[in-house]
Amino acid sequence: MAKISPVGAKYIVHTVINAEGVVEKPDVVGAIFGQTEGLLGNDLELRELQRSGRIGRIEVNLETRNGRTNGGIIIPSNLDKAETAVIAAALETIQRIGPCNSKVKVEKIEDVRISKRNFVIERAKELLRELTSSVLEYGPDRLAAGPAIDESEEIILVEGRADVLNLLKHGIKNALAVNGTSIPNSLRNLSSQKVLIAFVDGDRGGDLIVKGLIDAGIELDYVIKAPDGKEVEEITKKEIHKALRSRVTIEQVKMDFAQTFENTNHHYERSHVPRPEITQERATENVQAPTEDKRFVKRPEPVKPVQTDETRKFKSLLDDLVGTRGAFILDEKLDILGKVPTSELGGTIRNLKNAYAVVFDGYIDRNLVLSAERSNLKYLVAMDSRVRPGDTRIKILTGKSF
Image (cartoon, rainbow, N blue to C red; front, side, top):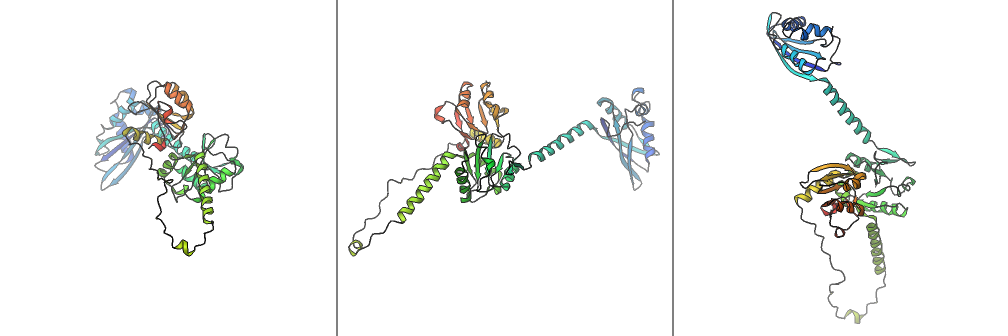
């Protein structure tokens, strides 16, 4: 008898009992077997089912207060759903337990396999989070790195371990710490293998790190700066995503550095020009009011396009994809038809028939544009583009477009 336990059962019947007097466990068990006997026929006779191991040991938990007994009954079952439900319904026919009028109510029938499956899924998620949220060590210099450093096509170079942790906390797992301005040898082999993006603090120290990487021969592709006066380790998720969309090419950064150096030298030369000796005659000369130097004309700020529901949707999807190396395929209603990794995007676009737009975490190149034109796509939306919008009939939007 009672060959199965709640641990080995497929279903568990949870029942509540309320007795109008004082009863004990043997009274409850006796009422269950006695008042259901012959009710359901020989195939569902509780004694026979328990003897064959299809019904497990009946557990009774009781509590007596103020002359009344309340409690619960747990019955494990290896029957199928329908048979278990019939057994559960039969329990509610019990009207007396021992000498007392009683009421029996089935609370629920628990599917143990679903409970176990849910436990497995939640535990797997927890283990995966632990696996992907740990900071690893990269190379002989043992640099702090995110767990996706090997499989990612792009590597985000940051200053220290705290920066890696902050990016990791917000779901960006391809960061690598350079440990200050002294460039480790571990970085030199990455230049030819990965797209390198320097993500530095929004101060002079950040500029020094970028200069140090350039001077050390590290072939950077893009540079990202944190908001002015802030460090990468302290900025929020929204600020991180905004900074990632505003990345600039290394060529532009080098031009900015060269311009800054030129302006500094020009200022130095002008400040060291010997002043002419001021004579009485020069002092009495009429001095004309300074006129506006027409060589220096203030350029108007670039005007961003008016935001529409369509572009707002693109921006929202692009924000969701930051750091994922994934791509969304959209239809004309901007519903997501599917999601693919960017490594498979070229082949996917070539096979598209009814797609309207593609939004992805990466940059737009000429091959991707040609594939999009052959598939009659309307939009390509990405973090950056190496193709000018005027060179194709495809509408190109990047993070700077929003």
